Length: 399
Image (tube, rainbow, N blue to C red):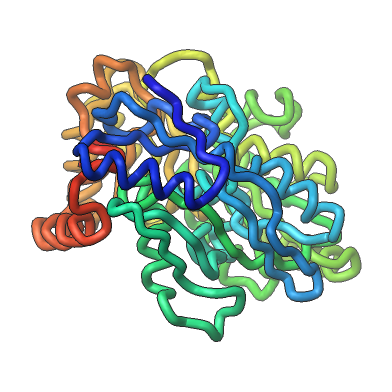
């Protein structure tokens, strides 16, 4: 595969126009930390964003940052850390679970709409995105959105491109909100709850006026992998509180008192709390160096444990839960069992199952993305035709 790494937006546009005219497909990528994710891309040339790097504009007082798409995520987070700000949506690092290398880029984060545990209260990556620039499939440079939320022109276009996995355009620049970083955090851990009991406890915690910013349940099969095995004995249900130290102290006590009605309660101070949520974010239990299938399943919070229980009647499944049980990370012990997984999701009221990892053989015969209703499929085709009429961007990626 030939790597094409433009160093300017104009150079990228020239490359795209040439490929559109010849009908030659392009694989769109950044740091390749999610290579192998999604359906296989039928392209011999790879258009990479890593030549487009650097922070374009950042005034911490405005709480907005504009960055070229190929900028390493680590560079963005370091600048924000220095100013006491953050990416609210807490993007995960796919490298451990997918067994990839390279450096995640900020453009890749938004192209894949990557979000972590704080999505529960902060929304997805696309909800922080204010504006972007990209090259469409005709080689035209498009600007959408702006630096403030009041500038709503093109806002729907911004959210449409975010999460499109490079099938609609080649991102060159992104502008996003960067709120203050919490001064501290602590986590309450409930021990010994089964999946259904944990779902009830998390629902009760989220209903309290204490602003829980993370709610996850770690069954017995995975607890020993977190914090180097130093979590309290038994299943662990983790609830995070963030903010100013005095406020966190008051809220953590209210939360611990309320949760003591459900199970034995322990507390994690800031260093252990930060490490635990990073490990949850990056799906540590399944960063096992294998190609065993891993699913990322989004369902209603109350049905995640029901899905796992139903699947276990017919397949060997390991799982843990984030987003109050609404995000289920599942590792299958043999094949992906896609038909089975998606059949039970439909039976339990709907949701989405995305195949994050599998062997090359399994990926060749399994759709990575959840099947959409025919009306949505037709609409997606029309959007694709509008943005990329020659069909050169990531052909087959989302199909």
